[in-house]
Amino acid sequence: MVLGFGYDSKNNNYKVLRINQGLGLLDSKNKAQVYSFNDNSWRCIEGMPYYLFYGHYNGVLVNEALHYVVTQESHSQCLFIARFDLPTESFSLMECPNYDKLKSMFNSTFLLIELGGCLCLLINSYPSTTSVNCFVQL
Image 1: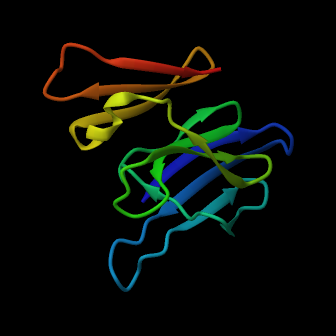
Image 2: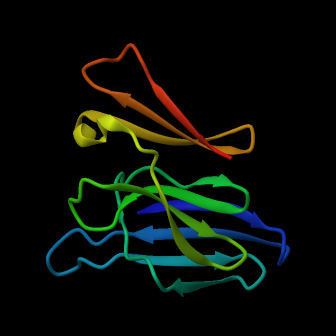
C-alpha cells in the first residue's frame, strides 16, 4: 500500500490517496481510494490500470497532483509517471523522459521529488554510483 496527501484548493479540501496493488493470481487488481476530510469518508477511484514500480514510495505532490512511477503492465520494462489530480480525482499518464539507459531499468533507481515547485525524476544507474541524471517537468 502507498499513500499520498495533498490540498485541493478548488474544493477547499485536504485529501488522502491510498493505492493497494494486487500481488497474486487471486488478487491482481489495483485498488485506489481517496479520503476527503470535508466528507470524512473514503471513495473508490475508477481507472487505476497501472502497476506501481515501487510499492513502497508514497506519492509526490506537485501542483495539486500526486505522482508515482508506474508501468502499464505487470513486469513491463516501459516506465511512466502516473498523475492523480486531486480536484478532479482522476488519473493520467505522463511519459518518462527519453533516457537511453531505461533498457537497464532494473539496474537503476528512479526517484520522484518536488524541486522548486516542479516535478523532478532522479535516475541513479548501478553499478555506476558516481552520477545521477535529473529530468525536470515544468
